[in-house]
Structure formats: C-alpha cells, structure tokens
Image (cartoon, rainbow, N blue to C red; front, side):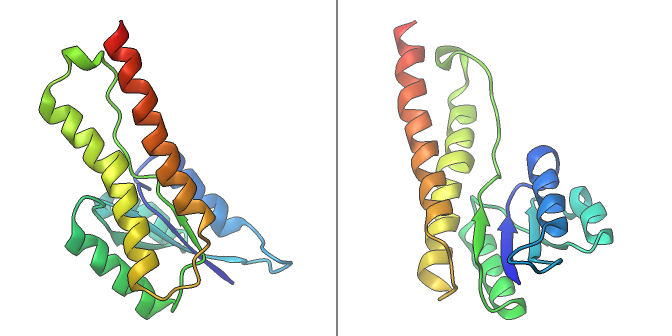
Length: 155
C-alpha cells in the first residue's frame, strides 16, 4: 500500500484528490493508497475522516506544524510515497493594486510552504519518497511566480 499526503484538503481539488486516492487501486491492490489529508482547519476535513481518510492539521507556513505532520506520518505509516502540495491561496488582482501583506501571504503559502514541506519530508523523515512530485511542484510554483510577476509589471 502506498502512503500519500495531500495538503490543502479543505475544499476543491485537495478534497477531490483525497477521495480519489482513497478509492484508487495501486499495483493491483484494491485499496492501494493510505491517504493522509491535511488542512489548517480540521472542521473543513471532518467529512474525509468519516469516509476513512486519515486527517491532520497542517500549516505549511509554520515549521513546527510541518514537523508535527512529519512526525505523525512517520509514526503512523513509517514512510511517505507521494506528496501532493496542494495548499495554496489565490488572489486575482494586478500586482500594483495588491496590498504587500497579501502578496507576502500568497508567496509564503504557495511558494515557501511548498518548498518547506517538500524539503522537510525529504531531509528529516527517511521516508520512501518519490522525488518527482515535490521537485516538480516546487519548480512549477517558482516558475509560475517568475513568469507572472514580470507580465504584471509590463502592463
């Protein structure tokens, strides 16, 4: 059985991914994934717990919270095979019209949070982790920011 952690499962894609992984088969095993779904607020993922998905509170911008999540998964499952960094916040406005605090919050969650959780799981846990998912997530988020910001500045 493969072990998967998905951040940002309070709604939308994260919640759908948690349910999909729970129902998916892997390598011919009908229950191929053990799913850990995380969010800032346990109330937003209590329905996932009822469906048999393991839930935990995790704030990707807080090193202590991430460390607690790492420790929890290490104790419960002994490894992590798939990490999906889905936690994120969206703001849709021209950069020049956005408050600096909002820009910083988006950057902290979407970029630094992704890098932080991927790095901590890779360095601390000694878990069987596929490098492709966190590496590609970090690169794509960083590339997204590096291409979007200059576009806003040119307008």
